[in-house]
Length: 257
Image (cartoon, rainbow, N blue to C red; front, side, top):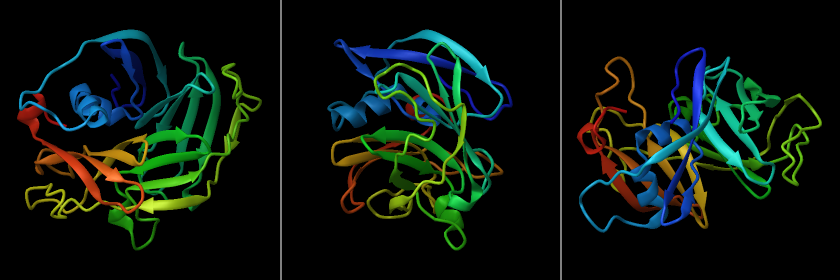
């Protein structure tokens, strides 16, 4: 469970298990939306209409000075990467922590890279993915995407053998963007927003095989509850087509997002 939007935020790491298989999530807000929705995305379309819940066991918690908006445990390095992106159209930040909360590196992603409000982080091989919840809003002046792929250069030279150590304690990372995907809430294949919000405010990412999963998990100001339905979507990396979607409202998951 990850709370956001405060200056000092406790991060609680959880292990979710079903039939002995761990579920690893990469983003703070997606984690809050519901473990069930994530499980449905990774395991395929739901076979029943009822929403189920799964137990979680807290194994560690710690605080950091910036507000987290994305979360990814990188098994290759045995490090937890925490993305902090609440400074819209400004610099963004990426921490590397051990799972007991020891900070190993602090990475600055400069404003000049062009991302607007980063909200999810994931690594697959030599490619990193960052979700942008407000990218399309600022398409005329910034990158304008809902998700970006970029070359993962291991900015802090952290140990890829799983030693949970880094050669540098801080770094500036100006990634080379290799692909951009943009999602539209009003597209017929999504149909989010109830006519009140045209933007798919992507607040997380999981990448699996030929697809990525994104969640429209943020409401615009001032109401912050205006724009249901929202959706978790499965999107083809090859052509940005929507392969599946799971719509939800506050009643679906028992609380507002």
